[in-house]
Length: 394
Image 1 (cartoon, rainbow, N blue to C red):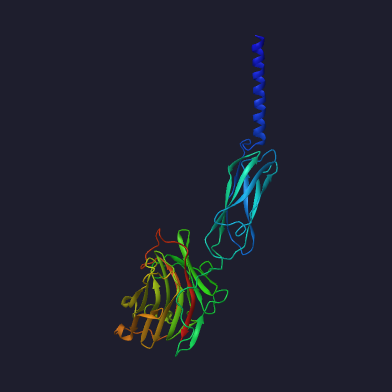
Image 2: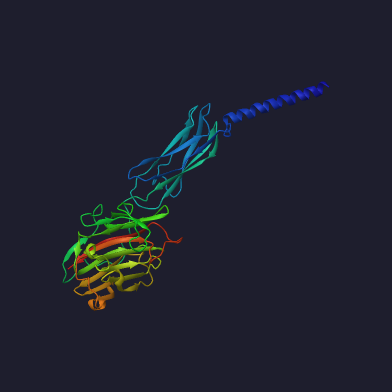
């Protein structure tokens, strides 16, 4: 009987000791008292200078005692010491508070490129437990104004025998020259049921490294792009035109380098005339079109053109030179000095011939529309048209 009572007493003492030990672990260990800690994600535009990306660590409830959590950065597509400064330490959240912050320095860069990811990993919690232990930092590089481009491809001479260079834009400045160019804006379908909204934002058109970059983007459920014109600023009648450009691709992408009669406000389209030096349907990236449009009114509109297929490559791979040789009663369209379309006054028959008059330039990327159709799941955004120069010789 006495022996049995001693065993029971020892057993009770063991339970008491174990209970005290378990209670102590919960009070100071990583399982805490059920008070969970969560680290936030952050998405932020990258600056040209080093800036902080702030991660917030939140507790389910304010703790009666001090909370501490270790943290360290981890590289993803963003690299330590190139894109962000690596950092490790211990976050302390004082008693009776619910939040603390971890600031990570992201190194400045102006290059326009894809988003990059890095992470902050939490560990070793004291007086709490970890509900969400890894935060994601998203570095948004989409608005940088530095866009490196491989300059490989065809180029044309800066002088032409028998011609004088009367105007050029080599895009060597720091921004689009609005003395020569105007941004047309809006999302009215532009007569073709197009889907994009044209803006004057540097998100959609900017100058970098001697190139004009026009960029079509997906924005929510819609699209944005740019359409630049020289109407009433730089207008021309006849000459040799050379435009060196690298084109976008993808279903529903419709880049164009073209001209309209400067009298369009007075006579409307197509009576003003249209010269399409270059059009491309993004789903056929190795095929371009040269076309002219005319007609006394919309109901009598007409056009004539031709296409050119690039064998063994596509027009997004390298620069090519798109040209027009435009004279009295005659228009020729060329790519890389190869003529693939010719048009003359006799082609319009009895209709008015509108091409012996002043015209202005239009550079744009349309998205969707009657001709290319809409983008689909294969279309990658953003898509860019890069223009090295436009030159007019007379």
